[in-house]
Amino acid sequence: MRILDILTVLCAVAMTGTEFTVAFILNPALDALDEATWLRAMPALAKAMGRAMPIWYASAFALIAAEGYLRFGTDARWWMVTAAGLWASSILYSITMLVPINNRIASANGAPASSVVLEHARWDWLHRWRVALLVVATACLLIGLA
Image 1 (cartoon, rainbow, N blue to C red):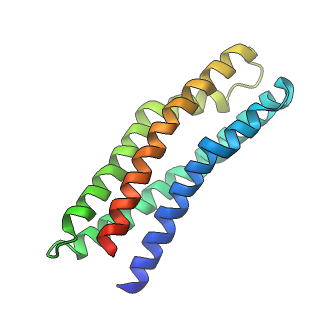
Image 2 (image 1 turned 90 degrees about the vertical axis):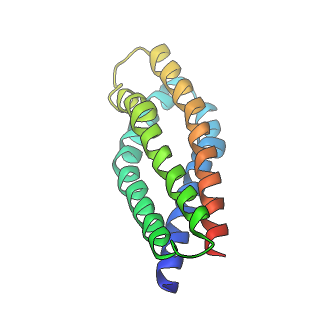
């Protein structure tokens, strides 16, 4: 079970850290670029993240759910159930709120700059709520494993 614990922590913490970095480091740095460079960079980043993140989110959820199942008869069960529930909520939130915007940004080559900028600003604001969900879910996971 120790190997599962390590894999789960690595996957969830790395995912949460990546999303935190996107929200508070990468996007502010990209916003400092000139508009032409920003318009070339955003669709490429949106496509790359759109390919990798679903697999990562699903893997983390599967690992957290497995941890919860294995600890269901212990005092940690509520922490694990909460972590899994919050992680599932972040996936549902992503699918319903963020993925449609990300897809529009990813296919925005040639779209008016103002519409892409507005789409990204909305995505960035909504993304910060996802980061908050992931931070709380990861904290619950770590408490449950401790």
